[in-house]
Length: 91
Image 1 (cartoon, one colour):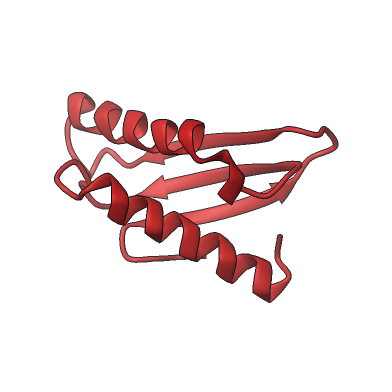
Image 2 (cartoon, helix red, strand yellow):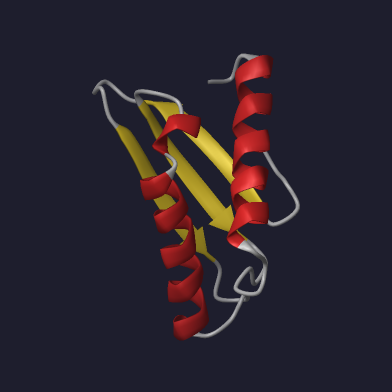
């Protein structure tokens, strides 16, 4: 699933866990920028676990610098992506 700022992959796991991996390309910026983006998405995951499907490993690949985008917009983007994945039956 691809949206404006991220690409999302979801794989079922054999545990009753929601897990997340955030991947940010070196093209986005230097290490400080990439780590900040990772922290933003991890925080969104930690505070909004209800939008993520149960028993899935989720990979988020950011391909834009999202530091200046409000967290509300990023959360809406994640929420819309997962609702679309659920409707398509991929999650």
